[in-house]
Image 1 (cartoon, helix red, strand yellow):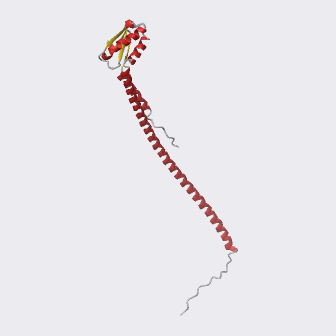
Image 2 (cartoon, rainbow, N blue to C red):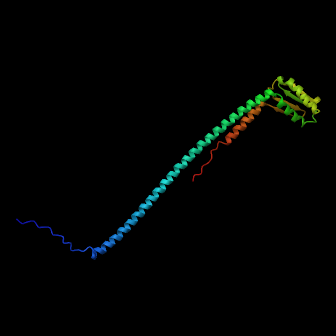
Image 3 (cartoon, one colour):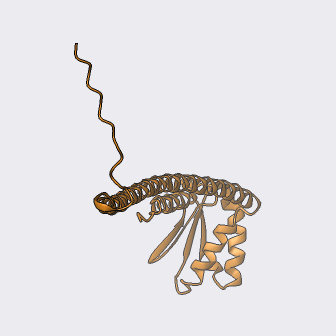
Length: 207
């Protein structure tokens, strides 16, 4: 029986401190350095792109949040504005009612005085007032007319179609009316127009 062959021993007869392998090693090192630089560059570019994308996504989320907050603030501002105007109107109505109760002829007197200052040549001026106001209005308005040389030309007439401090003043070629309900309606329309014009939410820059 033949004995198995023994493996050849490696005699370490090749020098690693020079010679052909040393030259090959320097080339491999250069290739390795180049590969490392390329890997670093690619990694840096990938990380940079990833960071830029994260930043862009974050900015997009921030912009969306800002739009949402601005929209909510605009809605809150409009609501508070409406509430403030409602309160102001309610207070004004209460004050006007209280003032009219204290001085029911004040608005009628002011309107009559204004008319008399513009129609001095009119042959007569008729003032129509609510029946419950006619007695007090007649005495007060005639006194005002006398002070301005208009007493004989001023006529006070009760009108069942009028209420409160409403009045209708007529002269030969013109006339003017004061209707509290119509005035309140015009005020309400003006308020609604104002609030309607302010419903546009402020724009937020996209960038």
